[in-house]
Amino acid sequence: MPELRKDPIISRWVIISTERGKRPSSFSPPDKKLPDGFCPLCPGNEDKTPPEVFAYRSSGSQVNTPGWSLRVVPNKFPALRIEGELDRRGEGIYDKMNGIGAHEVIIECPEHTATLSSVSLEHFEKVLLSYRARMNELYRDRRFKYIAIFRNQGEVAGASLAHPHSQIIALPIVPKRLMEELDGSKEHFNYKERCVYCDIIRQEREQAVRVINENREFIAITPFASRFPFEIWILPKNHSSAFEDIPDFHYASLAELFSDTLKRLSLSLNDPPYNFMLHTSPVSEKFNNYYHWHFEIIPRLTRVAGFEWGSGFYINPTAPEDAAQFLKEAAPLPSGR
Ligand SMILES: [Zn+2]
Ligand SMILES: [Zn+2]
Ligand SMILES: [Zn+2]
Image (cartoon, rainbow, N blue to C red):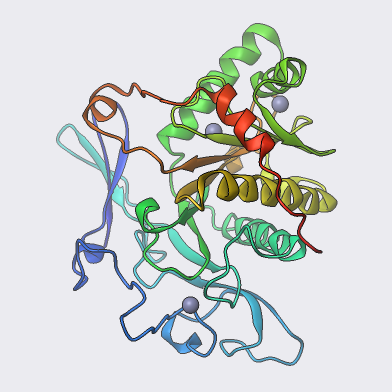
């Protein structure tokens, strides 16, 4: 059973998941496409993954067989386990609890060599809708306080399988990073009675030096204090606190701007490895006027090293204004629907 342990000084929880460490490939990436070309996420290998929990399928196709266009399965090597009680307890001055959670893999499309920036807008929308579907389902489990959705593109970014996929981890606590954003947003709101992200969007649209692109509902910017070169945020233009509760038609609109942004990134930087993650309100405070959900995209162009690890300071060699200009000038071809 994995264990969650809390750092007694800065209240950061870590997952001690020794079962993952026991894998034969312990400290090399697990499950990588084997030399013989076998990929457990490709169609035809449905029996090599745990049974699917969600799928978009052609009518008439059977579960756990080919015929899917998107498939969600539990992670074969989960960081957290779904069975059991949290059993929060102390050990002297330390706090710990059982590593309860859900860890799922969203197999985004059947094509092994596709990328999220190459799929159609309609398919991109399906990926976003699958995030929503799994969030809504997992939040029915009252043990889960936050659902983290993220994507690792490329080995450098931590992807252990080449097949296009995103991941979901349902957590029994709200992560520290989210708490920091929530606390900062609440503080701004208490002082100004406005959402800090809404204020940022207003100013960015006025200044127009860090805006990459926008459509009716969404905007992509390089944040003013970007930690990393070409860091990007995608936000809804009007205040919205929970990703899973936006109007249906907004997912198509988000797919459009998200796809455009990833295309600009791959054109400008030659398909860089990247991570993206969703930041949205925890289920306990889903509807609020202070926190504004968004995606953060971090291209992995530089390595986090001693200074960053030791200080929490980041040295970013590319001004976000230059990155925005560069991305703005990249001209992606439109995707078909
Ligand atoms: Zn594959
Ligand atoms: Zn807002
Ligand atoms: Zn964020």
